[in-house]
Length: 213
Image (cartoon, rainbow, N blue to C red; front, side, top):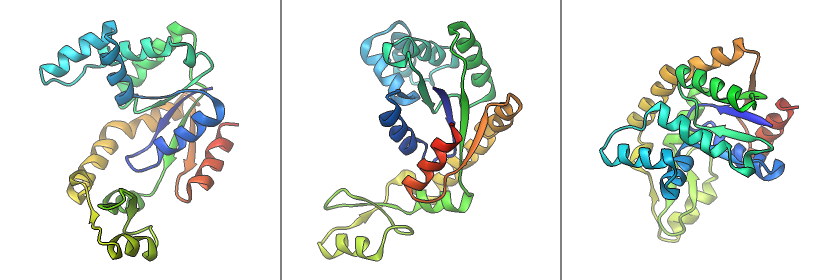
């Protein structure tokens, strides 16, 4: 099974990918993890990426594509893979299609984790970490008892700087501008499957796996 996961920040792509990876024994390939691994291993494209990052520049599409091609050649990707975080633009999608054609490993599906904008805002801006336990909570979705347990024990509910509302709005706007056009791109190619990603992790996973049948 070879799939691409699409969805805005906070849509639960990573959570669902990890569950599928464990169940189907196929790797979740996220761009950040891939980049770090390639740099650490000193692969041909990893060396190029490190030089680019050391110079303070963004890693180019051609380097990222090279890193992906190296990663897909690994034995654990032989039975399939879950691409998470790539492609992000239509040009990347075209480049990926060309690469997969060369490898004779075309995509089986592209899954869009679909969540209402207001819910995404609450998921992301509501995230808090208990300063005592490190437990991740949410002021909108965690129970009152869970939130009070941290405070009663003498802890604080801490919010990361990148979870502030203005930062989140900017991230979601970047997604809408750059990545949302991929929905139509893959729909026209008959690959798109849309999953309602609102609900418990298990309920969403059931809908996710049903879409892959």
